[in-house]
Length: 190
Image (cartoon, rainbow, N blue to C red):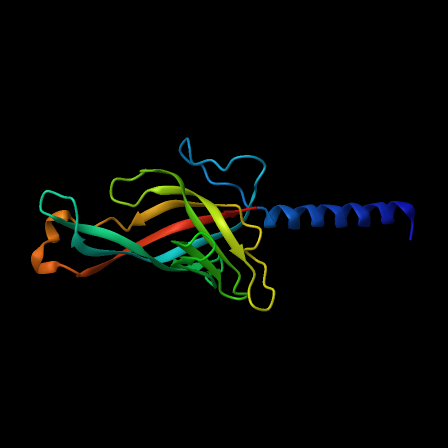
């Protein structure tokens, strides 16, 4: 093999490697001020959620004495090939002794808990976009670590999920639950 052929082969390999790395790179979404991830953290996973934001009619300091209280999400998150990647729900973070938003990886069972850092209403008919601080990460039972180094999560491109009208909550609907459909994109940063 001549040196020119060898150089051409090496150049082709380098270009193919660069293309593969670029294909795996996830660009951060455009977000309103205050929802940017600080520092040098980069997104390593993006998933699309389909599920519900869940509310219960309960006594509240509203003029009617009742209102819909948020009791947590329930969603399945899918990757770009529509394969289930994560489940999103609310559970107890035993380290902080608090109920927090939770994401669990569907394959390796690693899990993270997070709390709201900041939010912005982008569309009047959808829940707000969020920047969330990860408060705890735990490997799966067999050492799964897909989510283990997650530091921040962004919720963007939301559709639906808004609290039901306060007028629909009263003595006759006390303890009634409403599961409000929503969709969103979640970006995971490390």
